[in-house]
Picture 1 (cartoon, rainbow, N blue to C red):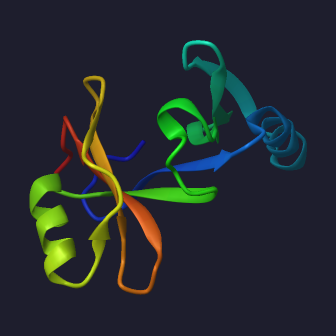
Picture 2: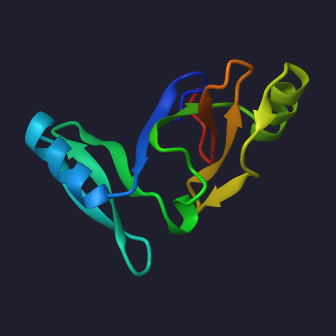
Length: 127
């Protein structure tokens, strides 16, 4: 995951059948899945030779309100300021900020065109 402000730091795809899609991407692009426990089921961190590249997630539990499809996480300097600016510029906040362990926090927004992305504030920022 990149933590450089202004970059796409991560990609997740959220679907009803993450197991099937995990197998699809493993076969089609050669990613290797690593199970990520979500309690009573697993989502997947997909890896290439370069390391972790994307997540394949079930649309349930903590991810039940995520839109189906790919969700890019764009790194921002200050999540609260970016959310405020989003609303001032005609966007809307789709989810309250969520903490992801000690890694950082994120929230989903919808831009004025209807596009949905997540904004990510990394706990350890790169220059």
